[in-house]
Image 1 (tube, helix red, strand yellow):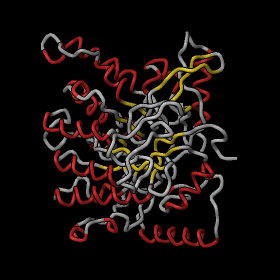
Image 2 (cartoon, helix red, strand yellow):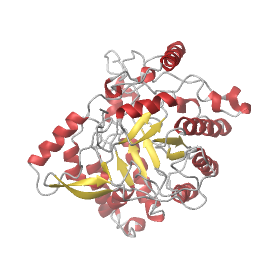
Image 3 (cartoon, one colour):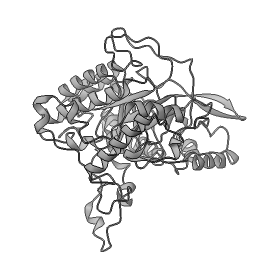
Length: 446
C-alpha cells in the first residue's frame, strides 16, 4: 500500500537536488563560461565528488531495475530516490501515492539569481526553467516551479512567458524589493498582469529573500552551532535565522497589500512556502489595525475597498511547519489561509509530521467552539492533508499551453482533472464537524 493509501494528496513543497552540471547543461552556449558554479555552502556537503557518487549509485539502481520503497521514511538529499532523476521520481511518487507535487529547485539560485550581470541573471533563470520543465515533463503529477527575478520587469515577463511554454506551472520570486523599488511600484504592474493573464501563481520560499537577521546578534561569545543540515561551518538555517524567517514575506506581502497590487489585480494568487504559518493570524490582525491607525493621514489606506487582511485571505496560501499548532492557526486565521507541504527529497524533509498535525487538530477539536477545524486530514508527504474536489476544473485559455502537458507548448489546454495544490477551500461534513475540502484556488495550470 502507498503512503497516501486511498486518499488524494497534493505535495506543496518537493525539491530537485541539483547535480553539479544541472544549470550548465541547460544554459545558452554563449553564457556557459560566465555562469558561476553550483554553490554547496548551504548543503550538508561541500563535495562535488559526493554528488557524483550518488549519480553513479542511481545509475546502478536503474540498471538493476530497483524500485523505491517506503520513500517517506528513507534517505534524504542527493541519496533520496528521485532526487535528481526524473524516471526515479516517477517511481517514488508511485510509492508515495501522491496526486500532484510542486517541484522546487534547491541550491542552483545561488549561481545566478542575484548576479549583477543581468544577462547572467536572466540566462540562469531561463536555464533553470528549462531544466525544471524537462524534469517534470514526463509525469503530469509533477508541477515545475520556475524562477523569476523582478529586477527588470520586461525581461521578467519574457521569462515568465517562456517558462510557461517550457511547462512551468508556478514561479518562485525573491521576497525582496525589485532593485530599488517596492514590488508594488507601478513599474512592476506588467509582471503582476502577466501572472494573471497566464494564470500562474507566484511563490515565496525560504532562500532568496530580504536579509532580516542582524549578524551582530551572533557575536555572543559562544561557539557557532551546526546549521540545520548538521554542517559545522554551513550557511544554512540556525535558530536565529529560523526565528526571523517570517519577516521578509511579511514585508513583501505588506507592500502588495498597501501599494494596491491585490486591488489592481484581483486574480493574482500566490503561495508562501516553507516560511511557516504560525505568524499569519497576527499578521492579518496587524494589517487591519495598521489601516485603522494610519488611514486618517494616508488617503490610499482610507480608499481601500476591502479590509487589508481580506486581500491576503483571497490571494495567498501559507504552509505551516510540522510541529506548528495548525488547529490553533485555523481557529485564529480561518480555513482559507493554509495549504500544506513536505519537502522530499530535500535534507530537511520529514518522516511523519502528520502525527503532531493530527494531535494539534484533535486537541482543538475537543475544545472547539463551533466549526473551528476546517481541514479534513489527508495523508500528505509532510503534514498536509487536504481532500481535492475533482468536480472543480479549470480550462486553460485558448491558445495557451496545456498545463497538464509540460513540454508540449503547442497543445491548447482542455479542462484540468485536478485542482492546484494551493487551492481555495470549500466546507464539507467530516466526523460531525464542518471541515474543508481543497478545491480550485486559481484557474491556472495545476
